[in-house]
Amino acid sequence: MVDVSSLSANQGINNATNQKSATSMSSLGDTFDSFLILLTQQMKNQDPLKPMDATQFTTQLVQFTQVEQQIRQNQNLEAMIVLEHSTLVSSMVSYLGKTVDTRGESVFLSEGGTPDITYTLPEGCSKVELTISDESGTVLRTVTLDQATQTSKGSHVYTWDGKNNSGTAMNEGTYNVKFRALDGTGQEAKAANGVPLVVGTTASGKVTHVTIVDGQIILTVGGAKIPLAEVSSVRETPTI
Image 1 (cartoon, rainbow, N blue to C red):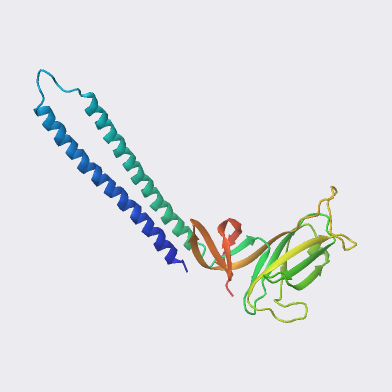
Image 2 (cartoon, rainbow, N blue to C red):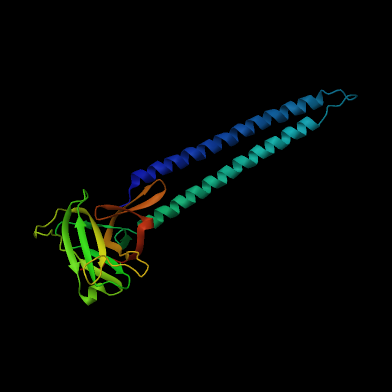
């Protein structure tokens, strides 16, 4: 669902800003009316032989015009903010129920689930070591992938059974995942320039909740909070 609390807060800010501009325009109008009345009275009572200098009045009229223009610019900006907010809300709704791939080194394990972990390999790997740990950093599962279909260059998927090295099912929650490219001797694989090969990781999950935090869309995938900027792809969730 969409988090309406944050939307309501944002809408309240918009309403307060709109009300402030409306008050400013009303105050300007009252002041300008008083100015015109005063100007008219002064012109009626001026000495025909010593007419008043109109420079001061002209300057004040220009100032009133500039203030009015500034207020109207603020109103236009407020209208744009409201429109942008509406567009953002519409965009949020479109993510609900979709399956997304997210960059990063974490995966959410639902109760009894078997999450897919996608990893992308550069050329030059003989083996791949996967380490799964909890949020405190304690290693729970270590897997070595050495089949050709799992260590060739490109994108691959590893399905975690949700268990640790002892075969015990882990509790629902977010876990850290880290892939390490290894060479034929089991050492860290490196490029020709001696730099360790980097294994890219992504995780997939269904979007169950969407909210706005500081103007940024945050997706809840399982129990993990994922900024929209970390989403690499969006697709329809397959029906079983």
